[in-house]
Length: 326
Image 1 (cartoon, rainbow, N blue to C red):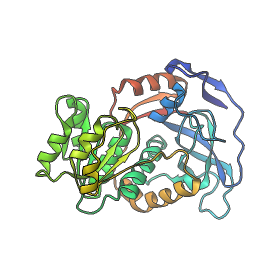
Image 2 (tube, rainbow, N blue to C red):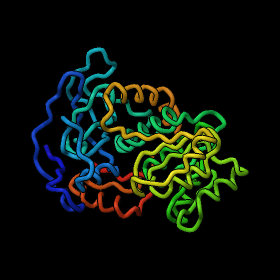
Image 3 (cartoon, rainbow, N blue to C red):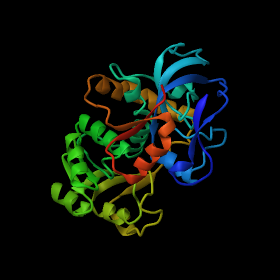
Image 4 (tube, helix red, strand yellow):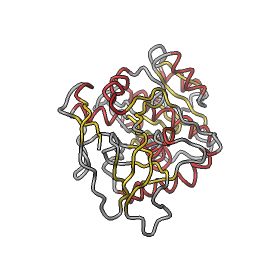
């Protein structure tokens, strides 16, 4: 099969098209003929040598795909050979075939194309796990999304606003701020020209927000603490701004704040399967009604994965960067 491999850690051009053996299906897995795959920041980190695949996972990058089931362990499932599906995988998505744990395989939302469906798994599994499971965003509460124009950001904005929450989002240009508002954010904040903590406090009458989805960390953390409501929660999913930050523990204690974080890739298939079931129950109906829409910025053919990574690193995009395999 054709696949994209990381020839050695380095810049985008270390990604090369190659021929690889077909993956072998094990118990509890299905083999998917890939039509499209999503490009995500963890793929970039892996290419740079900063995010090794979990033990046993493919060294081929790619964490989300959509395609057709062609083989696998389908006992005790509602799936069948020939079904069109999307899936979250631990690696191997930049290829013509990939194996996926059956628990992480979902039907396409009604009316969504393969390309659109391939943009779902990594972002929506991550957002649901962190915003709704870990941070427990509840009815009547507010959410601040850092990096609102990213794939994670546009997913979080759309999902939380569709569920009736006030959402604020940061982005790095006025055009990206406008895109966040168009997706459902009540207010976009240009972090290059505005202080997000000041803006958030003014929008909430100094109360602050209940939940912050943070992919920056670093020096953002003290400001995030300052604009959290009492009993507020921060869910950290990446450290683009650095892995260390000063923290006022007095505020954490007095105001009962929670700072948590997680990475999804190394979690068990059972854990991810539980998220998949919640997504199908609660999110898929909104997708079928187009209350939540795919936001795809650019589509590259598989052999141009290096160009896709270069675009990802430039941050000159809003939403998803995709690879078309078929």
